[in-house]
Image: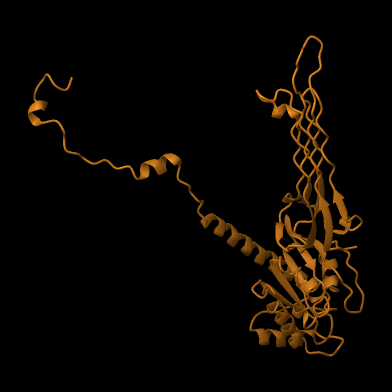
Length: 376
């Protein structure tokens, strides 16, 4: 089961209370206070893990509460800190405060994490309250309560390339042919209801290819599952647009292409600025070449003709995707190299930057300067 949105209640553990204890030892009269501090409560942490692929593991438990810290004890013994709870989510997960709506953190890279509910600090024991006028303090602090809130986790699939197009355009079949992914395939539309990921091998490297659920007209306005599908397109670097040459409903393939582009442009975050490779699928059908020529003439650029059944044009498609991704990475590396590091002046530089020396008139009379008895 693929889950890309979940709400959780999280609570950090309370801090342990401090101890009000006094030293009781033979031959040590008036030993004084020796109450230790309480331990820190556990925190709830959300961490991106490369081995997680969706949020299904968090659907069986909605409430996550960390344990409280142990109370302090005598002999200045500190209470034990409670262990943290770490929730593993896929990279690309956005963590939001459900009630306030603000983004706590966007977990993009594996290892990124955010503390969603911090554990309470342990209370101080009575040893901290002794003074010259209060030699036997009985005061101690209770532990601080841990944070609590409802958080919303939303996954946006991170893939190098994404397959888009109308339902039944052959996206799932193409993914299964290019990778070892096993998406559901059937001869009817809307077979794919959630993104499927696969790794396409190219030489010594490769890239991640995502089969994104089929879009329909009006998806940008929320028709069908439009927003649920479109948000997964946000993080893909390259779009591979599949156009079915002979749709089952008899619609025009060229018009279908422009309908999908319109939905991408009208989304909350316009997605039409992403590099796009246009392909006419199902090349094994008679007349697919004519559709390819019509679409290429309409767009004024090259349109690939592929077939996931016979393998026609697949090597060319993989090579083009790898080439575009290499150009994107090269441009990102050049932009990173051009970015100059921010230099902060040191304290000594700040102090001496405005320091100036100016010649001042001598306060010693000229005749006194010539007297050898003056000047020591």
